[in-house]
Length: 369
Image (tube, rainbow, N blue to C red; front, side, top):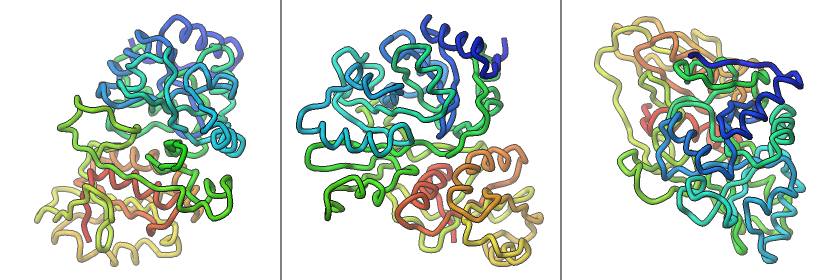
């Protein structure tokens, strides 16, 4: 039975909420990407997420709440942490920030991957908010795709991922942000960004006391799939191969990314077919296609068919590139090229680094210049 896509009428949202209350899975839209939702306090329901996604058991789930009053249902906020949690929630909730906090005892270990912490977020997408309210419970909701593949930003993307399931999908339109939330580990003396997203260091600093930049650090991991069943990872999005198309993908970057797991690659001496140039760098917007291809001519093997350019932005902004990143990566993959060459934005604090992170993992850390 194929997936069933519903709209956003009150009766359809009530159907989705009822399914969640019965322990079923429902794909829901959020402002970041579509999520595969289940009752976060039901071990059996959350186990279905891991089964359907083929997700490794040591990769924790992010839990979504409808109001900050639900936070004590899933997390323990000590007196020492309360002021910083309140400040972050006031600034960024609802929105694309996940806070990693000590988990409440009632949270099933399958959600936390056996760790003592839990990631919690309050989405701002009106459909996600409505479903959370109707379901009247926190919802665990990782991206609604097979583990390691490209995150979905439209309902049809979800249906394509789970074509052989009877998954219920709520079509809330295209996601506004297009990449996953920033994941922030909140501790008394330090805030650690575990996964980059739209909320960046400068935005976090603005919520903290003056001269607090040293209070924030960034942790970047690139875990091998060979360790899938070992120790729990600190956050989703930590594996080296992630957000990946079926087609071989390479990051084009002079000097390579300064990230763990980066490996300089050499393109095959012969490529059977054409190459897709995936332009995710708005700084190249004024460069005509012919000029862009000429700049990459020395990179492509002789005899390669003419390359095709896909630009992941309709206007030259990082926000536009982020919103269309996964959608354009899916388009590139569907064309059936010999390989995809991804052009990231120049590294910089903020959204540029979040885009670089997604492309780096889509390419499994492989880069060429």
